[in-house]
Length: 181
Image (cartoon, one colour):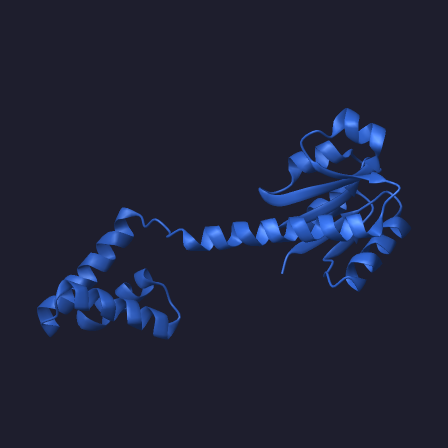
């Protein structure tokens, strides 16, 4: 689920925005009235959307955007003149707001984040040389003691890893610690 944080200088505006999104099936993580509160809410989250007004009590939207973690997108809601003047590189909606435009825009942003997540999961993680050496040593030990081929040893470690819910490096460490005794 995509995290959504709403930050407007007037908390009533933020709460009414939250109500619109919740009625449309979105889960809102937090409602804030300052940029600092929004940054506190997104701290520790991987990705999400920050829906923001142009100016909060402690910062403007561009300062907030610059402080957001890498996986976060910003949706700016401001007057058309402010958007044209200051917001060329951020997704924005002009006020007065049309509810269907908000819902469609948030939906589009959520889909983009979900696609990015799927692409990130599809990319295999690179192992450092120590991890590669651990897996290689565990395979070599399995090959020597159990007369396995290299492919069979690899599959064995892979299957044990999936069955136990650990990664291959941890499984290789377990194999080495058990079989060296």
